Length: 331
Image (cartoon, rainbow, N blue to C red; front, side, top):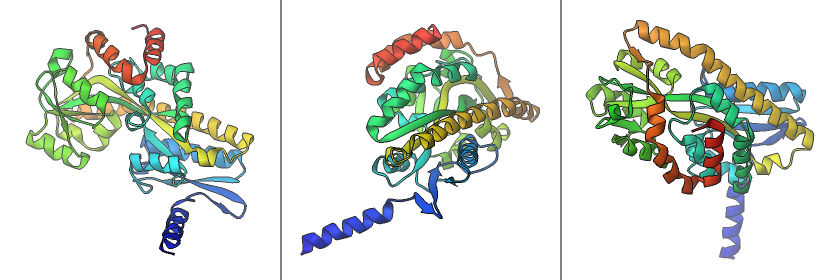
C-alpha cells in the first residue's frame, strides 16, 4: 500500500510540474522563459517578443507564446532540464550554457573566431550552425534558430588591452564555463568566478581588474562611470538559441512547426539588427562620459596565439566541426 501511495504522490507531482502549455478556448498557449529582465532593448526579450508576435499573427492567434522573463521559469540549467523532461515549453538559452550539455555547441564559445556579427550570422545560419542545432534533438530539445547576445568585450579598471600579452596577470571575472576559463588560462589571466551581483563592487574595490560583457550590458549598468577602458576585444561571441521541448514540438502539425521555425529565424535576425543600430550610439555616449574605447585590437595576433588552443578543444567539441569552421572562416 505504501508503495502504491508513493507512486501516486510522484504522479501528482509530475502532473503539477508538467503542462506550462495549455489550451485556452481552443488556443494553444506556451510559455517561453529567459533569465534577463524583459526590457525594451534586451536581446533576450527582443528575441522572445518578436517570436511571440510573429507566431500570433501567422496562426491568427491560435498559438500564443506567453513571455516569462527574469528567470520566472528558472535559471538556464533548470530551463534546459525542464525542456528535456517536458516541464518547460520554450526558452531563450545562452550558447555558453548550452555547451555544458551539448558538446558540439561549444564550437561557438571558442575565442576570437568571428571578426564581426555579419560573419557570425553567416556561419550560424548556414550548414554548420544548422547541423549543430539538429544535434539538440538527441537531448530532447528542438533548436529553432540563433539570435545574438552580442560580442563580449573586455572592460578594465586601468589597463589598456590590445594584444595577447596585455592580458597577462589580470584578474578577470569569468563565466564558469570550461572554454571561457581555459581561454583566460591560455592568456595568462587569473579567471575569477564571481556572481554578477558582486561584480560592480568587485571592480570598484579592485578585487578584479575587469570583466567581459556585451556593449549593451556595459552601457545599461553604468560601467562608463566605473572603469576607464572598454577594450573592443570581442573575444567571445554570444549566440542565443530559441529552443522548444520536443514534447511540445512533436505534437504540433507540420504547418505549425514551419511557422515556429520561420518566426524564430526572423526573431533572431531582429536581435542582430537591434544590436547593430544601438551599439554605435551607446559607444559614443560612453566615450562622452570619459570612457576610453580601445578599437585598435590586434585580432589576428589573438587568432594566431590560439591556433594550438583550438586543436586542444577539438576533442571535446568534435574535430569535424572545428575543421568545417576553419574552412568557412579561413583560419
